[in-house]
Image 1 (cartoon, rainbow, N blue to C red):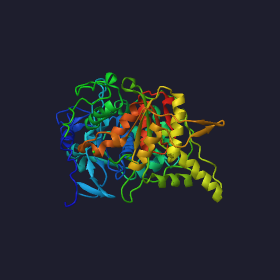
Image 2: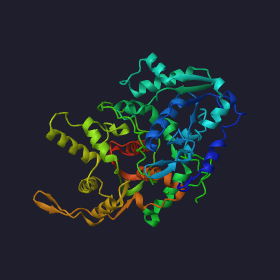
Image 3: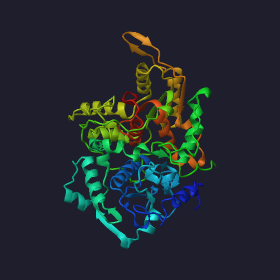
Image 4: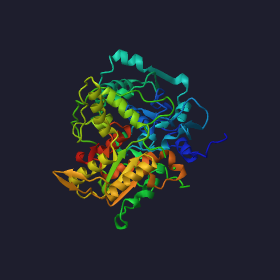
Length: 483
């Protein structure tokens, strides 16, 4: 097609998905031709990686609890086109990307532990072969939720338990779920999702989560930016049997940005999140794995969403929205309480100012927040900025953090010079190959996951997923902060 730039074909990842070892008709129950499979035909598409990733992990967890092989699908930007590329604003992007180009681990067909004999996830192509239409039992979400009394106030745990119990006790080998999505955006963005954490945090869906070999290759290429040479860790071999790795495939051959992963193209925007306030207190230890060996000491990672997110921040203020997703845990610092809903132009202005400071901080506010964080964590000396900001704005931010902001701050009638960070690295500074450009947001996320301290945007699903991974790694709660 004329005018379309060359996009990655992801050939080897499509081939990986086609040749997973569980795609084998000689395997015994609960895999093989008589196995137990679960396909969510109603899975959302057309949203950024982090919105889709939240749902994918939750759905694969239901499959795990019900002792069924999760049927994973590609990351789909446009399901209504047969073209390999679609125009998103002014840029072309792939309409479909194999899931294993983003993640590995059990959700994308990776191995469970040797002692766990749960059926492994399979590709949608294998589902079509092993579960033709005549073998499928179809369940409609609307009908099931009506039968169970599920509504917009139901806790995530309640929904998860109803589905997993029903699917576990069904003998039907091939179950297809249709209708409205199970975990819609109002649920995922509300405190009701937090009740799932005790179950999800101990599940191999999360404890064995791993990024794809494509993402990990990019991460390790860029690690020297964050370490001094003597302290640079050695990349793990592709044959590593770590619980966080997927040893079923070898790393891809190395031959690059849309940052946050939450924005959607055209008119396909996520429904607004719920207006509920946080009232759930987690009573379990977050995760069962640790990631201390890969922590980048002295690194402060910060997520600064720009672009069209400014409009969304004002929309949040008008609706008095709380933080979203896993950002709402009560044990995390920098909690946010929406201001009282009062009429009047003056009140509206103050309300929006309160939201913009937490959702769209200025350069001055970023400088001040980082200095307060430095006082709590004095060994921090370098900054990684996850951002989709324009070059000019990124340049201004880096200058403010490395050279001292042009305006001094008055504290108790004394002028205070701002701290000058030893290095400031941004998303724009990373070495990203052409084949990695559509997954580069995951590279940012993995670096933020490893940072000693992370400051995120509490209204963002990208931040929420980083918080999820850091908690799964048993990161101290005080090392997770928000604007």
